[in-house]
Length: 254
Image 1 (tube, helix red, strand yellow):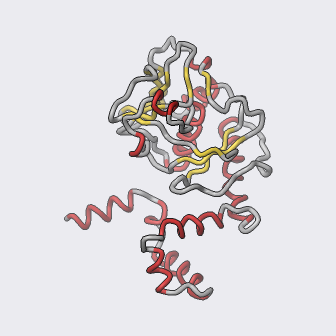
Image 2 (cartoon, one colour; image 1 turned 135 degrees about the vertical axis):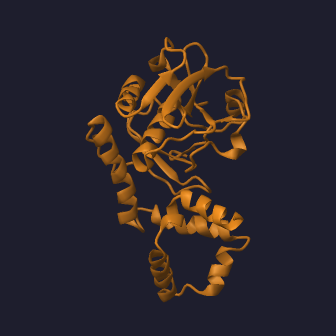
């Protein structure tokens, strides 16, 4: 029973766990033909495996070494902005550095899209609640909003905020200092996630958008109620809770 439950959980994660067995075998055959050995496979599972895996993944995101993979990731975002915002944007020149550690989700932000428009696009597809309803969301101040050209960030590719930052307040993140998702970035990230999976992030936890602050000095949180209602709420910068956490960001400008 335990084993079947574990298999089910791994399948639910998506990614490589949903690949067909034949796809995995073919990939291993390509590696073997080019000199990949069982000893190398053992090393990949060993103590230095993480750093090796990061270098391998970085090759895919290096436009000079793998232009087709890099191009397809960027073109996904071009199609996304055309589909949801009717914006024709050329992202071929955008600066995207290699993924850093476990930050594997690429998020590209096209600046100057007002928050109310992002929310309006979301409301056409699912319910969005702003609590309190009279809070001026569009007056929210977001880090990196001064960018005049599209920019890229890396975040954790998870449905919930990463475990390391759960319980940390916006004030803690500010003093750390570590960058984290703004409200704009979290909403765009969440819409892209919904576009891919037809389900929402933050089902059991709340994302603290500590990279943003309202004109009243409050920090926005994003959560999903009942699995289908997106809620934007506000807390004090000092607020912390075990089920609330920021999503750390690695900026491609760094």
